[in-house]
Length: 534
Image 1 (cartoon, rainbow, N blue to C red):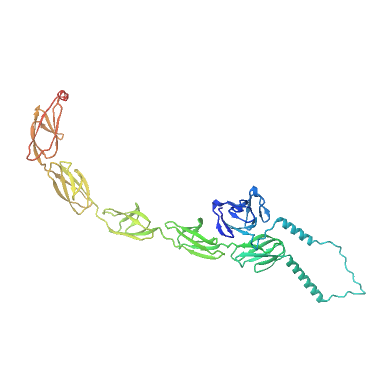
Image 2 (tube, helix red, strand yellow; image 1 turned 135 degrees about the vertical axis):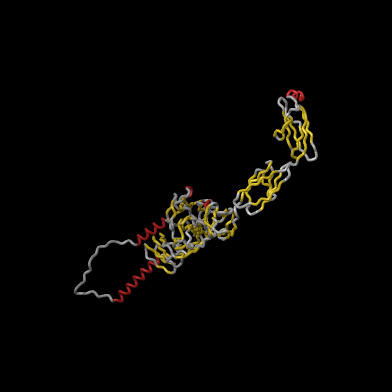
């Protein structure tokens, strides 16, 4: 159990930090300074652990502190109502659940002091009281009355006077031996009763009591009844302080039908809606529920056993999203999970979601939406498009570049998906060939193809050389004898002249219309090539 320790001193009230515990009680310089103790001397230490409060005395200061007259020599427990006497001060211990109040009263300069007395004084008073009230045993002898001379009967007035004198004497003796005691109770109008010892005479919080041991019982509607053991001595103007703890209140928590969980002061309590017994005072209520924002609020609990209702309106962490489409009946998937068909309203958690619409005979539609908590929104109506058609484009020769509506799409042979109901403009180009254009209509979900022959732009190239029986290859394609004149496309070409026993002759040429080109070769044997390198 973790205790919150507060200290109330003549100069004010403060809370003790955890790193200050245990609190040193002693002379000037101690955490709790009291009169009657030398500077720097610690007479006792007050600390807290999992079992509650405890008090202990250092070996060098043993005997300087007492609890209800008992000298503190080793660690002992402090319970509600205990009074620790140190030097010229009294420290009253008040426990309320996990809270502890140490009420420090300085006797020096104070006209009143709590009823705490030295054990020696108690023994002396007890001895004096015993001596004063000792009774000697005497034998009993019945009185005899002479028949001849009857005794005169006393008059009633004399009996009454004797009775009054006896009562007055008893009262006077009680008043002379009694000690005035002031009882301060919070709340002020609580009932106070002294049990044990002599009967008390009291009015307005002041009592006349014979010295002795008493049990003070304080009670008030709405508060817990407390009992305190006190010792009344012969000192004048003694004072007793009693603080009653409020009874818990019955708090009904209404979440307007939302099933949630309640925590009070950080401790889980149970499910709500529901009614719980809650200690009086300011309490931190936290209500949590799936798919709702956390609710936090400080509630002032009246206590005193009274009932009160606390209503909490939980804000959803989701929002309704309405989705519509043309045509209606499209299947709706959110983050890949099917949630129904349009028109549709569904609750989505706050955040980013992917919404997909699919319908037979129509092209799928997809988008990403951002959902804010407790903020409804609408998507659509979304007009679903017809499914794409596919077009296969081939060219002669292959490897031509294809652009559709001015956008490059690849090289032939090429298959692309195109929107239906539109005339698509194709441009097919290849180096050395004239560009070719086509206009192609596309139908929904239909496959079609188009062949585009390319017209070459030719230039004249003459190849000649030795040996004359060598073979000619253009871009790897055999073209016959090496010595010949060819019309070739106006693009960069690779010419090769090959003959067995000779190294291959390779060159690149770009034919151009109107500009004949001549390529000459002379093949060499491998030995001639090596000699030429040397």
